[in-house]
Amino acid sequence: MERTIGQVAALAGVTVRTLHHYDQVGLLRPHGRSTGGYRVYDDGDLERLHRVLAYRELGFSLEQVADILDDPQADTGSHLRRQHALVRQRIERLNQVLTHIEHEMEAEKMGISLTPEEQFELFGDWPGEEYAAEAEQRWGESPAWAQSQGRTAAYGPQDWAAIKAEAEQIEGAFAAALAAGVPASDERATDLAQAHREHLQRWFYDCPPAMHRGLGDLYVSDPRFAAHYDERADGLAQYVRDAIHANADRTP
Picture (spheres, rainbow, N blue to C red):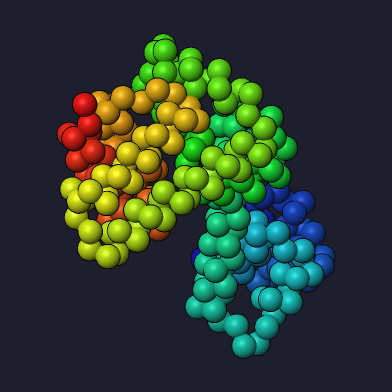
């Protein structure tokens, strides 16, 4: 099927001027000309235009696109595989940027006076910021939330580094206990749960056993927290939750 330049421009969402330019630089020459001398495009031209626009969207220059498309070893499958890989790379990079921005937003909400570099270096994938966001949503009007806000507003980089190191130590010990087959109800696991509760009380807010039990449920029910723990060890989120419940049962 042959189409005029206006039809192709409308179909592809580009301007006629763009198609003229592509023709002038040899990137996309039309299949032929009408009897009136107008450019006429066939399905092969549209397929090439689709590839041109895909690579342009990925940030390639016109010269680079021409080199890629004119490679005699490339076929439709290789183009699709290349574009697929490039899009995945872009998605991964954008996800990294999004995570960084979200970390800065949560840190600002917590009143952390750190540079973006310090925030990213300290927190990584530790969901301490998400603790605060979730706490605000659930307990924003509670004394615990006000207490946490009052404490964290005074913390500096060394404090946050200590918080993260302590949290990492507790989580690592939980993972080791799980790997060793220690039941979540065992005293070794419940002692770790108690250390976790004391960590929250020391740095953020008073956390009685009932509140700690609710946090344990959150680590399983909220995909963010579950992913954080389960990335360290498969099933760790459930294990931590069960240990917290067992500790709450034994704690007055």
